[in-house]
Length: 92
Image (cartoon, rainbow, N blue to C red; front, side, top):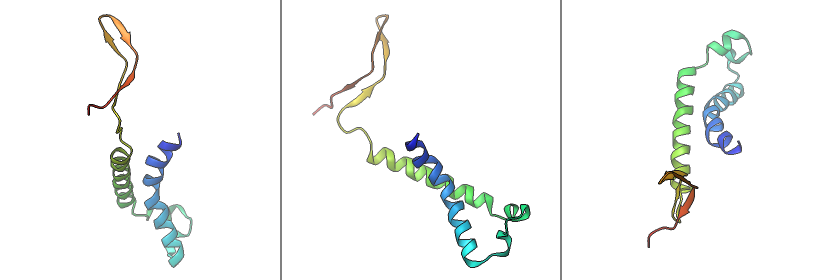
């Protein structure tokens, strides 16, 4: 749950949070808290920026946290019997 939150939710919402902090710090009039102010936000660009950040984080997680010692073999059927999942050692 924490990994999903850190790798997907935080990068997706980070551009919007940063934009709101920036807008509040310069005192933008449309950040007054009304419904019209929410419609005035650049939602398309914030969504695109969030999606790009999610992709970057997921690629980084795969590249940095990938399996180095062997690889995981998921459970599968072999001759009608279930072979449990296991890690096969790396070929050296």
